[in-house]
Length: 175
Image (cartoon, rainbow, N blue to C red; front, side):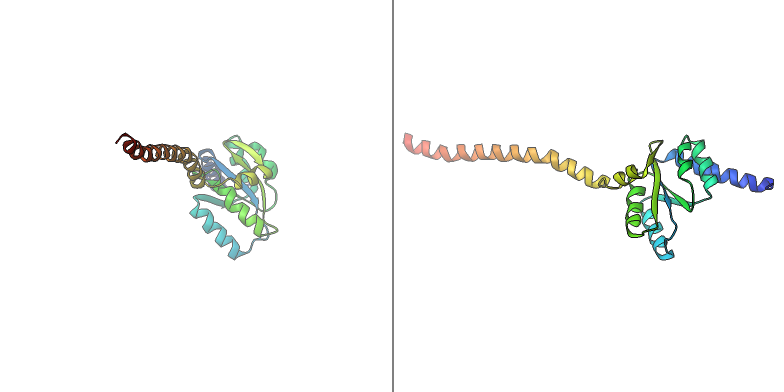
């Protein structure tokens, strides 16, 4: 039986992870077996830059934290060497970065994830990773709004130019 201090440490770890899970929009669980130290270092750096917390923790502790926030279904994916990536602001960031590494490294595998408090499967996480970034989506939206306005401006300018050409000819005919 573990000592009281060890149990308190584990409870604190579970509580901290549960708080992170509760406050995040999305996260991804991966099997990190077979990743090299160099690739792992690069991946962790990319995750940090994207505002994602990447944690390797015992499956039992991760499972308890998931249960505490209503993600109990996640426990079925917590087998083997797993890690969890938790997005702080961007729901797409963990999926994007981890999908990139899952494509490069054969043994590195996305298992599942969660999105807005619901457990999602591997296919949903991969689909989420294919969504363009927030900045790209905003740029596309603004471009689609701007396009009809440019069309209207060009049409109005054509009317003005046409009326401007007809005016001198009309003046000559009256003179």
